Length: 99
Image (cartoon, rainbow, N blue to C red; front, side, top):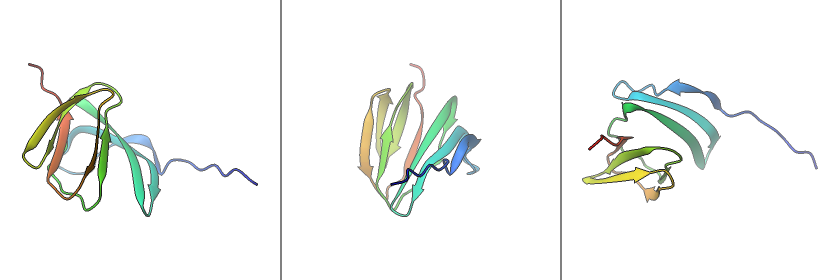
C-alpha cells in the first residue's frame, strides 16, 4: 500500500472574491464531488454577503466569536461552537459586534 500525499486545493489565505464580502479570507482544504472543507478568517469588521446554499453547511468556530444569520434567525457563537445541517436559506456571518 502506498500513502498518497496531496496539497490543499487553495493552501494560501486569499480574500473571498464576492464583491459584498468584506474582510474575509478563505482557504480550501478539501474539494471533492460530495464535500468541500474550507476555513474562513474574519477581520474584526468582516462580513459575508447573504447567500443561499443547495447543500448542507456545518459552521465550526475554532477561535474568536461571531454572529451568524440563517433566514430570520440570528445567533452569536464563540470558539468551540458548532452549527450544522443548514441548507438553502439566506445565510451570512461575521464577527460579533462589541456590546
